[in-house]
Amino acid sequence: MAITSFPFDSTSSYEAQWTLMARLWREDGPCYGLLNVWEVYGDSSGMQVKVKSGIAWIKGHYVSNSAEVIKSIAASDPTNPRIDRVILRLSWTSNTITLEVLTGTPAGSPSAPALTQSEGTTWEISLAQVYVGAGVSTITAGNVTDERNITYPYKRVSAQMLLFGASGVLSTTDGASTPTKVEMATNKQNLFYPSFPTALKKYIEWDFVMPDDYNGGTITAEFFWTANSASTNSVVWGIQARAYADNDAIDGTWGTAIEVTDANGSAAYTDRKSAATAAITIANSPLAGKSVRFRAYRLGSGSDNLAVAALLKLVRINYTRIG
Image (cartoon, rainbow, N blue to C red; front, side):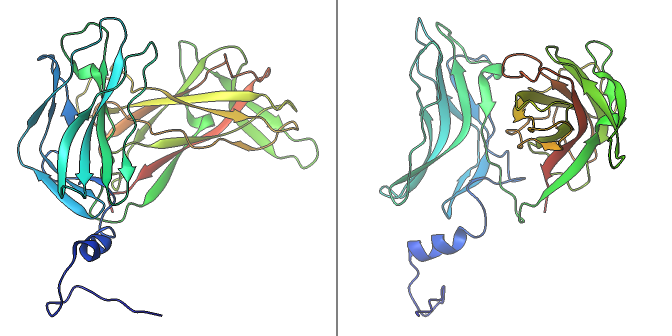
């Protein structure tokens, strides 16, 4: 067995050794809290986006941008939209990290261009997607979707909080049904959960203050539920959220809803747990200690084909701590 140690001032230092060591310090991505974290935005000033200052880490290599940069977006296609990507590109061949735009392919249903991630040659990470509509002459704020993986100076630790179904507020418009009390026949366990009927989209809401260790990033959600059915058909659950600062108007736009599909068990009243959703962005700049309103729903159509009511036990919110 060979033991290797470095760096020492009595030996030469090599790029491979330093970057191997440096990969343990941070994940790839813009560094939290340093400058403006490479935020990409459009401001309707033409076929361009702007990238704010920041520091980032890629495969043990460091890159810093001290001032806002403007990146041109190629002319739009007259017929079909496309999706571009704003990226950071590490090139081991040229010994550089550069800020680039990957231009997508116009299509009726366009997809973002793939990232090149070839160890030792080229490694790209995405900062944002840019939707370029057919025939447009400017890029708006709404055309840019954040894709940064923001990294933190401490180990990223996951934590959870629980939104109990019976404690939620049933929405006045298209709200779920009043919690139903059900007792199991043999061992007398009692359930008291709001009911979401089949074939209808119904909502429930909660107010919550984000924990003091919440890092302000995206979250995911898992749904715990049951149904009085032996069908293995599925329920589609969705969730969205909005943050509120002191004196904010409550009637604000929700964040984008994210959905997850979960199949029922093969017997009545089995305890169901969905997979975690994809990343959920809370609207209106969430922070630790800030009030957040969550709204969950059962979709009730399409691949949501369980033909009975679903009872929602709780939603587990997964977030990342500051450190």
